[in-house]
Amino acid sequence: MRTEPDRSRARGRPPPRPRPERAEAVVAMTRLAAGPDPVAAVLDELARRSAATVALIGVDGRVLSLRAGRHPLAPAVLTAAARAVPDLHARGTPAAVRGGDGAPTVHLVALGAGEPGDGADCDPDGATDPPPWLAAIEPIDPVPGDLLADAARLLGLCWRLDRSERARRRVAAGDGRGREAVLHLLMVGDVAPARRVAAALRPHLPDVARVCVVECAPGRRGEAAGQVTRALGGRAWVVPCPVRSRHLIALVPQHGGAPGAHGSDAGAAGRLISQRVPDTRVGVSEPVPLHRTAVGYEQAFHALAVARSRPEGHCRFDRPADLRSALGPAGNDWASTVLAPCLSYRPGRRTDPDGQELLATLGSWLAFDGAAHRHLRIHRNTLAARLALLRDRLALDLSRVSDQSVAWLALRLLAPTAPEDDGDGGDGAGPAGTVGDGDGDGPGGTPGDGPGATRGNGPRGTPEDQPGGTRDDGPRGVRGDGLGGGAPGGDEDVRWHGLDRLLAAPALRLWAHDQVAPLGADGTAVGLATVRAWLRADGRLPGTAAALGISVSAVRKRLSRAEQALGRSLLRGPSARHELWLALRIIDSRPD
Image (tube, rainbow, N blue to C red; front, side, top):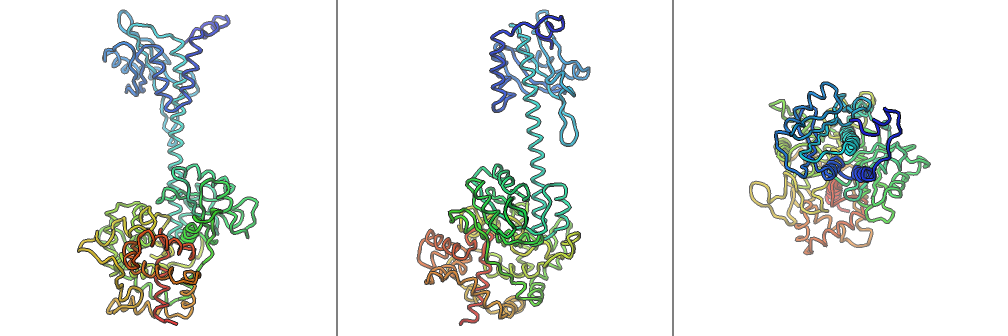
């Protein structure tokens, strides 16, 4: 649409000075264009100033937005304007005026007319998206042409910015899903496919990395992700946790991950993040190869439990322990026997989970309880069905810490030590490669968002939620006395007598004492007694409180102090409850 300044230039005369009311209108609409929902705000302002009915009409004739004017309008007029837009667009006409002779005048202007490409935007998939048309219908009073032209230019700019922002969000969402897929592959030990997917993203995956778990302030994870990336010089692989809304997971190269820091400075990454990213707590793992990312995540999560109470806001995991090296081939043989019903499982339908998927589900459940369905991206009912199948195949009651610990140890011992080659490593790792190191099948949440609470906010739930009645919530016997042996027979002999023979290795005696020694560092047995009662109650705070004769809040405080002493997470998953149960079983089976 040619305005008066355009016509003056065409005649070779200087354009007239803009009228004060026009300048005021431009300033007002420009301010609205910089605010929230600018397209709607500018349309409202245009309708108010012109007293006309204004609308945005797509090139297919659909009315995208409508603002009523000061005077009523017959629907047929708007329908006629909408029908005219596809024809005008097809002919390449940038503007038109319809009506007159007693009928309402309709001004039609293409947003972005005269701009390169006629204002058509291109989506990431290559499809063009033509801008809509602005329609101004004046039943009585004429619409100033300058006002309409200025509004059309602003609306075209706002529309393009809106489309660009939507495209940016789609690209960011796709990038996030890609990074989450890479993280999941690393967590289950599939390094080769993770590298192939990561090749399209940046930065490149390091061969050896420290895993950092960063806990952000509520609602600030997106902002914190950018700050963490900048703090680490753009060399870290930063992924939002797919299960916990306040957590970020960063894979920091062992060397060069922290600008200006030496590779020997183990706490550099955590210190940089906590100093440069406000309101964060950081847990940092030991250096781990990519196929042991799951182990690094668990270590970082344990370190985060300690970092929450430290004034510096960061902590490095410093209590590594490797049961596989201590148990050797005998551990792998025992684990293969325990998990054989899953390793040999073949589903009746292609859509049903196979043995590897079942083991992945088991690893995720042991780490995250009810949050496992979010990590696995499956429905709660699907998770419940898989757990029921696992219970039947393995003959283990996964609601009990004792049976959980057997399954956890079997998954850990069956996991591969390392892929032969990063080019094809992880593809031939067998079913254990699906569950990583058994420390958890990926980053994830907690059994609920409250610390400790009740065991089971997912499909398993508490025993009261299980079919078949209630179960005593106090310190009852588990496979005998809760931490020691029971009365095995048949398959039980394979699991429990085989487990006791496995745990009789001399090296494990020292390992067990190292696990529980910090609980008695204060010279009292309160911490150890509380942990014992908690394990006998299968991690349920009400049962622990009943056994100790104290309140639930007192139990939670004692366990929080035990977390600080152990340097491990207890109240949130991944939890150290399985290692503690195994350590106490070793100690109780051979008392000093």
